[in-house]
Length: 102
Image (cartoon, rainbow, N blue to C red; front, top):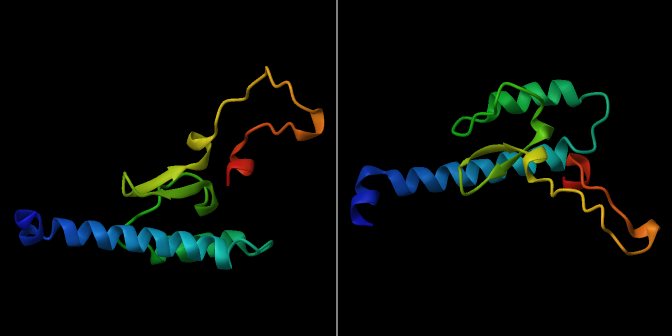
């Protein structure tokens, strides 16, 4: 642990996590309710993220911050597969998508 602190690895990792959480909170607290301005807000937030850069593809709303990786991951990767053997009531059926996972 001492060696990691000397190299700044532990402190840098903590800063990445804090920034990732902060930017994720900014996405959904301020950008979530937007309708017409989502594209311009997308550009603004991409410019603000210093330590944790967004991938080029898609919008910021397509990603969540994965703490274990320290990077942005697609919501679509987190979607659970559809279970066609559902035996419950039809009105309780939810088909998992990126939107329902968000």
